[in-house]
View 1 (cartoon, rainbow, N blue to C red):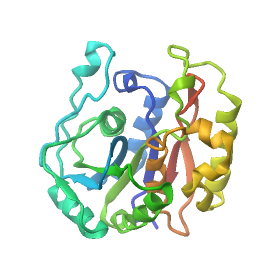
View 2: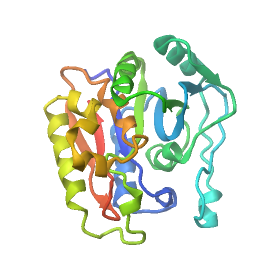
View 3: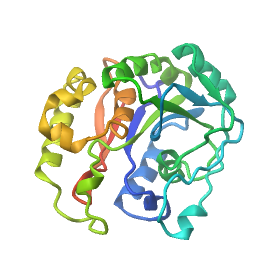
View 4: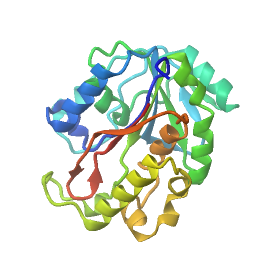
Length: 258
């Protein structure tokens, strides 16, 4: 469907990517040049993980620096993309009763550290959707299906997290270290399932065994992927425009639907 916007899951990794130039940021920029310019972006970020479903509804969302211990230059980054109360209202209509957040949140680094490379002019309205921490993974996949009509309305649906995200095993400052076997195996299995269009095992990813549990010991970074997969149409191709591992235990894989 040439008139349908793609849906993209970004492996966002280290917040320092926001102020870096590397193979990942170059690939994010290339994605921004390759996709049609959307009317707006709806982003599901791993870092808005709360007990409820909410959507940012402010006109000018603030840039949130939701991390600690990084160089000052990262805290000085601002991503002044406008919000879209209209898109927030549309999301509320699709998902049912949800909280309209009019300033309590904003754009966290899961969103802006990637979008500052994808849309560096910050001229595309951005709305964030929270992840309800109370719900099982399959629930999120089913909720994501209800967002699919947005792709035909000029909205880029984005997820930002990491398919493999184990900070306990992460080797700080060693971006080129060999990834763990369990990380490589789980990513390979997930790719196979996505290419086959078999989402059920991923929607219940903890059933995939020890490799899955080591790769995603907490669900927050994995769940944004399900929102993207849930919007797939029968004729959508699946591609992986960004690949690689950071610190041995974080997959930087991006997944593009359509």
